[in-house]
Structures are given as structure tokens and as C-alpha cells.
Length: 253
Image (cartoon, rainbow, N blue to C red; front, side, top):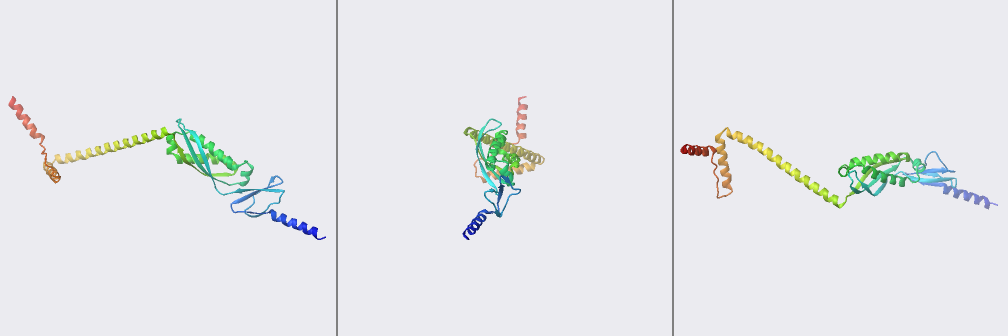
């Protein structure tokens, strides 16, 4: 006679033990009772799920790091490149993530891929290579706006690698080399321009004092002597040559 109550109690205890679920700190449980979702997600900690009337879907609140595979992108200036990126997002509303979309991770991945192709297709190659931070912010804003109804917050989007065709790599290398040569010539010309101003100022100062010119001449001779050169050049003033020219013209007359 006591066997049946014991069996019933045993089944009831097993049922309660099976109904006890433990959710970690970063987990939430969306409970469907007879097909209808409960008002709030359960967890973390100890919760009760009564099968078969209840069905629980676990959702992690941790940041998901999702790699976007390389996408073929044609830039605004008709250059074909391959770009891959990484997206960091997390679930902010577990109920929306389960109710509004079938698979929120797959949906976010597809949204990131299409957004990457559409946004990068509107910029030129130079902007793609030099303004990554601005493009990353633009991608993050667009993906976050479209995934917000799913209860997802996109925190960061980073382009990892831009794969260029071989001919474009050579063209960019030539462009960089030409730019370096241009800068070198500009710096050299600017240095000569500044030196010419300094020489003009020095000539103006020396011209007002003949003794300064003589001292400069002697200083030059001293510098030449220290180099142990066998040849010393003596400059002849122009007035001395003009005097000879004047004497020659007078003689011919």
C-alpha cells in the first residue's frame, strides 16, 4: 500500500530536481510557457523551469567577437579589393534577440558583410587606406542602428586587412617614391632659398666694412691651409680688373 505514494513522491522529487536550473552571471533564460514568453528573462542564479510546459532558451550577455570573412569590394574609383573586418557586439535585450530574429548571430554577421560592401563601395581607394578610423565609426553606427531592434549593441567595428591587386601595390609604391622625391626637392630648394638670404645679409654687412672682407679672406686662407692643400686661390677684386680695362681702352684711343 505504501509503494504507490513512495513512487509518486519519488517522481515528484525527480521532477523538481529536473526543473531546477542554474544560470551563470553572464547568462539569461528566456522562458516560453505554453508557447508564450514570460514577462522578464530569468537569471542569473537558481531558477525553476517546469517541463514540458516551459521551454528555456539561454542567451549569453558577453561580448561576441565575430570575424567578417574577406569581402570583394569595388571602390568608387573602380579598384577591386578584398577587405575583412571584425565586429564586437553584445546582447542588451535577450527577449528581443530571441523573438525579433531567428538567429541573431547569423543575422548580425550577414548585416555586417552587406554593410561593409556597401559603405566601402562609396569611397575611393586613397580614403579606404588613409581614413580607416572614420570608416570604422561609420560602419559601427550603421550596423548598430539596424541591429538595435534585435536588442543588440554593436560596440566596435575594425577593418583588419585590405588586400590590393599586385598592379595597384606597384602603382602605390611608385606614387610613394615620387612623393618622397618631391619632398626632398622641396626641402633642398627651401634650404637654398634660406641660405641665399643669409648670404645676402652677410654680403651687405661685409660691403659696409672693407676690413671685414679682408678678415674673411684671411680666414678662408687659414681654412685652406689646415686641409694641407698645395693650391691656394687668391681672389682679385673687380675694381682691379676694371682699372686694367680702362687703361687698355685709353691706350687704344
